[in-house]
Amino acid sequence: ASLRLVLGGGLAAESLTLIEGPLDSGKGLICQYLMYGAIMEGSKVALFSSNQTVEDLSREMDFMGRDVSEAVQDNKLSVQSISRPSPGVTPESYFGALASKIDCLPKSCGLVVIDEITDLAMICQDRTIMGFFSIFQELCTAGKAIVVMAQAGAFAPDLLGRLHQLCDTHITMAVRDRQVKVLNAGKVNNLEQRKDNGFSFQVEPGEGAKVVPMFQVRI
Image 1 (cartoon, rainbow, N blue to C red):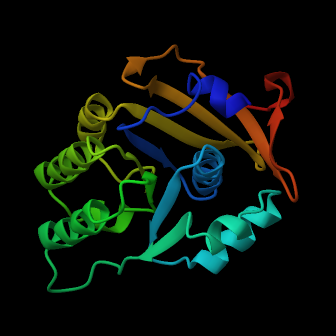
Image 2 (cartoon, rainbow, N blue to C red):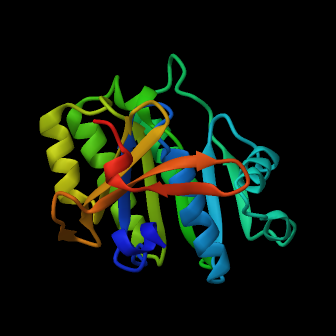
């Protein structure tokens, strides 16, 4: 409920979202909630990942109290394997191949999640990254919402500001007080938000994200 409230009811169709934050800040969990919500609303979902299989994803979501086994069987949830950047492969060709795969997804696929572009972003020039996000923004016009995850520090501050302007939604994750994770959505569905548009949470096995009142968080 907190995530839906922060996102003004949810991500808009045909929108581009950037979720960035440090390791273990809950980026993957938030994406799992978005994927589960899309499936419950009748959309197909595709995750592009270099280190997860559909079995891995299904186990993780089940561990957090979200059973997607039926969605996997019905091909409503799929994991597309993407290789990590390798020597001899240019960023442009890598991004081009990824864009082609997304473009070939069926129209019934309403949500696409791209898991971690950090490694590639760290070696790309700013114009290449901006071109990458512009291509995916164009792909959104075919009825898809696309979510891109990246680690904090993957983009220089100036570039991050430009990506903030380009993306429809920008979510920043952080870690406070060891186990407490913080989500803040500075921009939602192309509207700038107040600074405190977010919530803090802990991850509880079998339950998922449990919201933590701010007075319990040590800053």
